[in-house]
Image (tube, rainbow, N blue to C red; front, side, top):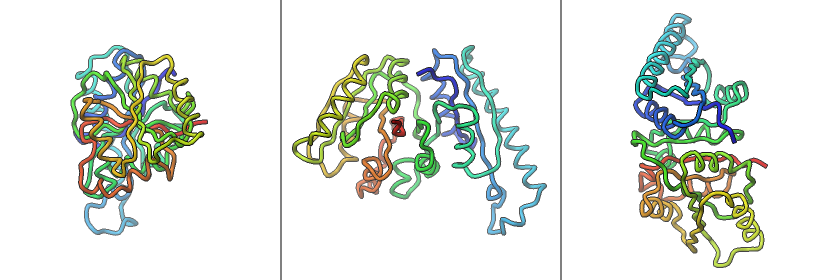
Amino acid sequence: MEIKNILVATDFSNEAYNALFYATQIFASKPCTFHIIHIYDDLTATSGPRNVLFVGKKELSHLRTTSQENLTETVHRIVLDTGSKLHKFNTISSKGTISSVISQTIDNLEIDLIVMGNKGKTGAKELFMGSNTIKIANTITQCPILAVPKEIAYKPIDEIAFITDFKKGYTRNTLAMLLSIASITDAAIRVLHINEEEIMNPSQVSNKKLLKKCLAKTQHSFDDIWNYADKANVIQDFLSERNIKMFAMAYHRRNFFERLLHEPVIMDLSIYANTAFLILPVQD
């Protein structure tokens, strides 16, 4: 697929800027437009326990101006830091909720990829990825999301892990962004299959064949790990042993991805703190 429009959400934190920089490095050799979006709402204005209804027009106007000024500053900084002739930067300042504004923007600007800085919090899911990333992953079904954790430095990507249980088949449409990033970075795809039963059922066997077909033109390998209850730890071991810089999963609601998020082990670990995470919504 040709990647033309990338949407980068920012709250002007270091994590958000780092995610933007990280994305410019992945696509360094490709001409594309980065749309940097900042979303604010009435709640942004209330720093105390005041009633949201009483946020005045003046305060909202101040929020809008500050948002636009910070966006302009972000563009100056990224242009200086990357010096890329291939990249254009566009800014969007918008009032509303993060999910609805991003959803609208994806359609309006034909966005190919969303990029977010990932700020882990203390809740189980939030350790896995920041709460805004979870919100977006739960509501955006038409566009892949790249979550860049904390402030990791960009290092060339030589392998991308793709994690699956083969319960569903993946089309080339679902895998398009994964295949594109692998092609741009010249990375191999390492499929990690966590099998919950000892023997794959016929539908899993056929889904594996389908995946092999999709990966035919990309350097790839398959690793099987059997019968682990503790999937989150297995994944983390696989990523760190191979020093993998990015991992990907296809996202079906109430499926592997969601079960993983509910594992108690995630309570104990700041999982995947050093690895960019590509979330692929399932496309038919």
